[in-house]
Image 1 (cartoon, helix red, strand yellow):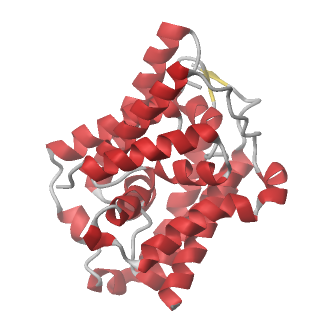
Image 2 (image 1 turned 120 degrees about the horizontal axis):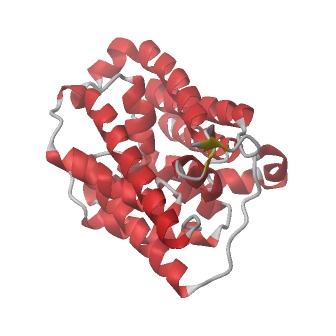
Length: 153
Length: 131
């Protein structure tokens, strides 16, 4: 394995991670809720879960880049450049998106709920979830690279 | 009202963290998942920073969190849906370089692939079954 030192952005990573942890702590301390994005979105899609705090959280997540718009180029560690449209990419994104939604609903959590909040609570279930999705992610990218020679972008 | 404002603030902070860390950008996430190519360890430090600050929140919440019934998940069993669901999620994560939080924040960044993933992800979340 070779480390891409030129791409490695440790200070952005730690600062951004701290903000994410701060957000999770705020939601836990004031609302008594876990900042699990798949759970929040999944509950909004089912009648019994449509509580105002969930809409507010998703609105904040969606609006953050718009509110920070002029600052985003200075804040982010790498420019976010959208690829040009192609049909194979569209199929890959649709399939990937469905798997993300279906899988996180089945596992009751994703990178935020299991990865951040669950590990912070030292939950064995969350550790198993994180090891499972990380392994699957590593293997998917390795297989993609061996088949195409590049990344799924 | 207080719970709505704090929730909105938490969403904004969370989104800002995803932007600052670079996690809205599939290039950064796939760089981490790309063990057989040139590996970018940034995501590991994002997780470390986020877990450290959340851990403080968990300690502060203490008894109050337990009173809200938040300690149910560590007591639950490690079962098949947890592992199968997580593997399916990891497959989608590897195919797109996006997970649920970044899907929403990158859609707000007007990054079109994230909007496509968001639509399909919502379908998956609607059809999927929790345990």
